[in-house]
Image 1 (cartoon, helix red, strand yellow):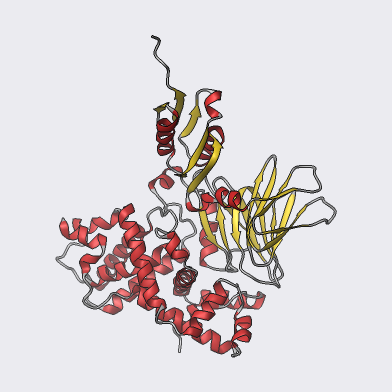
Image 2 (tube, each protein chain N blue to C red; image 1 turned 90 degrees about the vertical axis):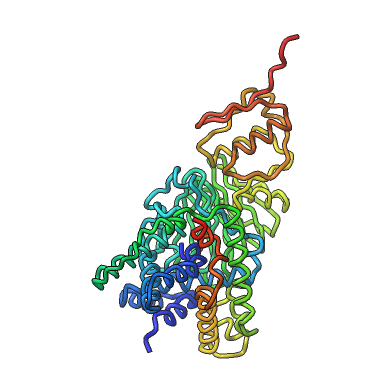
Length: 313
Length: 179
């Protein structure tokens, strides 16, 4: 009996797919234009069940920030968006797809193998799922990966000067010009410098490693709370724990078109504590104004923070 | 995208049911919507998934009627319909998300223990169907059938409109009525 919904459920559940499985799936998708739709729906259902069983739903209600009007304004690159759809819809289109996020865009992307990538603002990565490995090339920016367990296919992130390898765990990789940082939130991850002659460093949950250009070994440390805080962007938030205003402003500016500007350098050294919405620099500025006696001047492109002038007596 | 559309499928079915006579037509329109979503290569224009889904469905219904050469007096572009073009606002979105979660949990409660374990092993431990079968001491076919049957049952529970459902319980509908 040919029932697309039943077949779609079976396909959504079948993983990992080997080469012949992928070919079969492609054949099935080609049979009837409705099959892709049925598969999309079954995968969505599976994702809902998985989230509910792991109680992520409770923490995430409302789920992740749904696309807002701001996203409409900033726009998303066509190719990137297509890649994202490919990632959600099915396996065959995923091979070597490039995914980018625009400024202010944070994307949660389910990967074909059941892993999930949370991709930070202004990032670029490429996903290649093969039968013997799962590879992500991080061109720039930051991503956090919840890796589905698959002992036969290691999950490897290549961030240029450094690499990280996991089997089933969660970790983030951040790539910038001055270095690459890998932080582990669950399980164990092996990291190494690309030119490091094969020396690996093993990181446990709560540990991080920072690779600087030219250095063979990373600086490592243990800071579980700081790692979690630094990953607040996954929920669309910025978490500040005694951070300098200057660094907080730099963080907001990575996500928003409307840039925060600090008028005097001395003000940039003020320390702040708080949890803020990434896309609300105006709320952040209002809080700063209230706590630090700062004057806020806004234009559509800029929010200026300056010490209040004390009127001459 | 699918994950963002699925929570609205039930509302869509309710909405379609109020406009279409035949349940088979409702099914066709819903299927066609998913099909089109799956074929989208570029979702940059989809910033409001709910509105997008309803607009797509409305166009499909209109096309279907033209094909059927049935001219209805009832205007499809009823201004009251435009309410869903406004995406749920934050408080409503939170309420809708809670409602969805409650619905999902009620649906999960209908799962057998084994099905629940299968989904958990799949999701949390990332085990393959084969590994799950080994752990449970059953054949892969048993795992596949149980998971597939449960997945379809839950999809059905999540998306089928309840008979005699209080239509004003969804934010969108109550706004439509108040206009």
